[in-house]
Amino acid sequence: MKPYNTFDHTADLGLAIRGTSEEDLFANAAFAVFDIITDLGRVEPRETRRVLVEGDSPEDLLINFLREVLYLYNGERWLLKEIRVIKIDEKALEAEARGEPFDGQKHEICKEIKAVTYHQAQVRKTPDGWAARVIFDV
Image 1 (tube, one colour):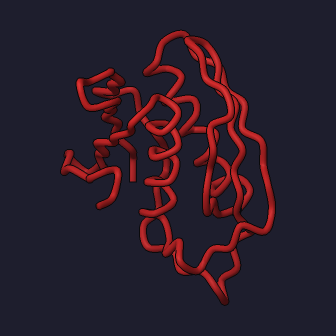
Image 2 (tube, helix red, strand yellow; image 1 turned 30 degrees about the horizontal axis):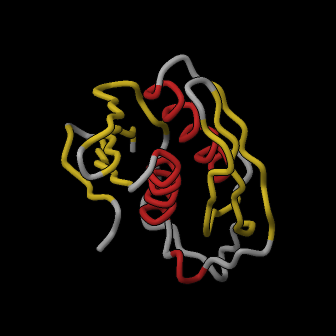
């Protein structure tokens, strides 16, 4: 079972993400973005990138994190295969992403995600772990 599901939102894409821990939640959110963008079965973990972000709230931290990982594709044409959150606290996150540059001969783009929004963004601890909702412009 995937650690996320999509939901319809007027002309946008919504994600509801789950995780057993806060680190797991953030990693699953980044994974979901790239799982929607491309077929991750064709992406190899050839290169490592560090991702460092700050935020004023859990929602701000998640939005900034997703903006940063989305920039890997939109700005650098780089595809994420896997990600590990190394450190997270109330104001900052450090992660290590593995993936490779986009190759039109090898990779197919399934859905373009333009941007992540603050609209209805939510991060919360639940009895079963952690949950978040976020909406993207597509």
